[in-house]
Amino acid sequence: MKIGIIGAGNIGHTLARRFRELGHDVLIANSRGPQTLSAIANETGAVAVTPREAAQGGEVVIVTIPQARVPKLPDDLFDGVPADTVVVDTGNYYPRQRDGRIDAIEDGTPESQWVANRLGRPVIKAFNNIYAEHLGKHGRPSTADDRIALPVAGDDPNAKAKVLKLVNELGFDGVDAGTLAESWRQQPGSPVYTTDRDLEGVRQGLLDAQRERKAEWTATANSPGTFDAPL
Image (cartoon, rainbow, N blue to C red; front, top):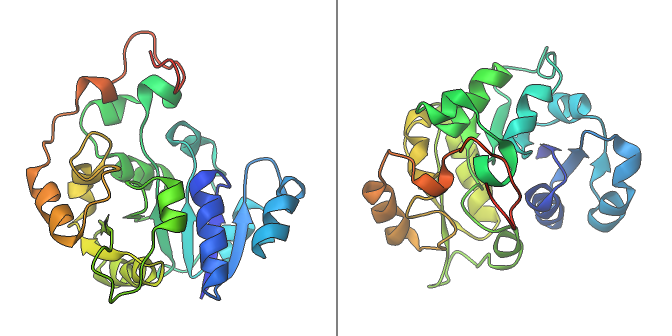
């Protein structure tokens, strides 16, 4: 499969490496240009490109950038990209640590629904609730008893099925987490966020999730600070 990755941070780098290990063709981009990605390209075998080339070249396109930077993506990023290209959002809203206040999210719009609105494309929410190190190292064969499960939310059943297949290839059990409107169930502060639950644990965690944002995941008048000193 051809996979485009927009964002070369911890999750983007990890997915590039793992998907290449699985034999997929990977294009990777960041905001600073392909010339800044030579180390990742050499390590993983992914091809360094521009964001537009990553969007144009993938059957699956993974957007894995800070939430606050989503509006800075090119307005024409997905112009001409086929409607059946699957777009995945891995992002999380960290108002106190990084992103500052985003009014629509603070007012209750699920994070990935906000991303979809900004991109002008339907998205699938996945890979947001696991640490990059665990994503890279804790995949297990399908026969293993200690497999971590990952929730996948979205509105298009075919797109979601394609992402669930990739989750399984990476060594995790995929859980259909419902529609994109329900993706708040896997946002930061939810029971399934960075808790490495198994299949039944994730299913129960999604049911136990509360819609109201917890205070630590809500912006303040001084936001943002840093991950070491959130405001």
